[in-house]
Length: 572
Image 1 (cartoon, rainbow, N blue to C red):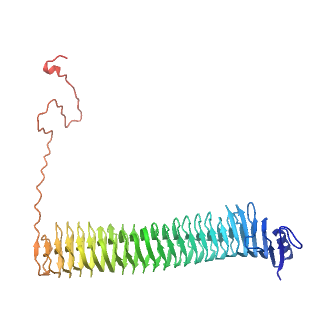
Image 2: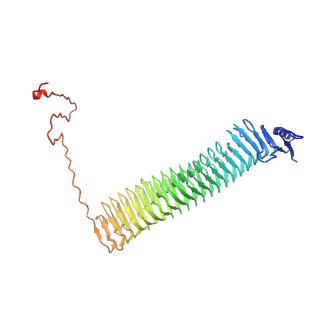
Image 3: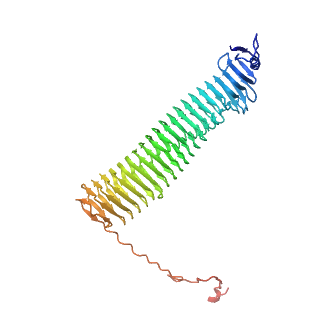
């Protein structure tokens, strides 16, 4: 049977004037106790042992317990606290220190000035419901916990820390204005459901040091850094997360490998999804809306797997840079101001079943020979510049790619290599394909229809190898070869009512070309006159020179000035 004790600051018959005296009486009796506390302000330290319940008799918040410095509630055993306000300063061990057993805080407010709010130590357990924690952090270290409908406000550190193999679930709780992280999980396990985080100065939700973090149906808004970060080989699952106004929606680095599903990253100031430094991650059915810089970025050795996502608005859709990798499938990229898909600087990316709409550039590759991109089963619609552009020494391979309604379909420049198989271009205002510089363009089953200028064009010293391809209805010419560029055509056809089938410079093999349109040889421009340079060993004068002193091929020169009076007889 539970023994009841009553505490009133005014005393009373059978009552205790302070909480500590009631606790001493309960400890002496050695039975389960219920301590009912009348409204008031009690300045004392509560040491609770055994099976004890502390209850405020008035409304929650009517009982305030405080100390100038140090721990206010020291709990060991089966302890429940309901409706109290606990205020402390400089309590490194915690304003509430749960040393062992099971602690319940229900409708409790903890104000920790320059201190830890609640410290749940190894092998202990704590359940926190409908509580408010102000200024300090709540720490689960090697312990178990359940947090529900709590608020963490203005923490000077992490609002909630789950560390040292602790296991904690957090439901329907809110974090506002933490100076570091909203929730940090380090070498521990945590599961967040239906939570809100806003105003943190660093990553709102952080998993590090092989942590396991699960996030479901949570919201992160207006944070200074990443909304969600997985680093240092951490993992976990994210589902139904909505992020608005963060620097990065989700950051993955240093070997971390989370799974992110059905989440929305809106108006991120830099990137929606940011994977770097050997980070990996699976991203499925996510939306990235209005990213300030890049929707999905893989850089510095990152290697994400992206499926069924949508990137719209912002500058660059997907970028793989600086020796990174990535696999992207069934993803739509649309309405950007820059490039839809970018592969730069020794990176490797595979794109499958993509849809690109209303972007100036579709795929852009740039870098040395280690820079490669594969694009298959993809459509690029309404592009302002080029559907695909490869430059530098990069290599791009396209299979079953359609480019519709834009300036230029496919382009290879400088020393790049572009390989096309079963690809097509329609409605291009300039042309279907262009090879320039010393690039190499290889196409099999290329179909260009309705280009307003050319089907394919070669300039500079580029090389074109086209087989089994069709060019129909090109406004000016089916194919044009300028400069010293050359190539080979195998079983190709040019049809329509354009002016010419081929305009060439004599450096292309046309033996298997099928066409009824004229084939025109372009007259090569006359060679520029040779420049003559006369290199005289000594000075050359083109008019009279007076009073000159000259020296050349000398290692030492002595100069003397003679007065002109000695020459013309004039006096000084």
